[in-house]
Image (cartoon, rainbow, N blue to C red; front, side, top):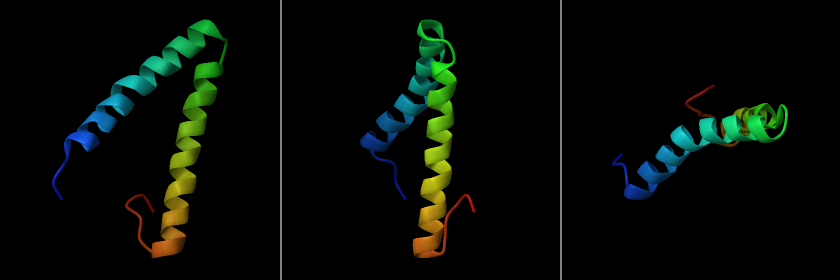
Length: 61
């Protein structure tokens, strides 16, 4: 499957934006960045579990 510009932009935003958001949230409010990181990881797990239930295949399970 070919990568599109949209996929590359979103990937770059996640790769560079998530660590920056975690860092700056921890600077502004204590432990807020870690809550953000926990929420993102939880959404990843729940989304992949839902995909596995609906389609029977997920790359992570």
